[in-house]
Length: 91
Image (cartoon, rainbow, N blue to C red):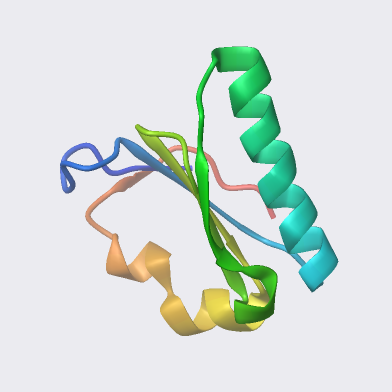
């Protein structure tokens, strides 16, 4: 989890994670979207597609990025947003 409040005005946090297959990426996006709706009343949009290797779930102040390993390495959001503060890293 990356705290980007000090460097961005459109969101407070990024959650960045990998999925090892297109099916996993789609399932993660749907699960996050549904959990946000049921637990917090948040209606989210899912951008991108599993075949693209990058899906984004926008929950307002929290944006979840779901990547294939190749696309995560290519886009390197952790480096791009290095001005943010890492709050949690799980490997």
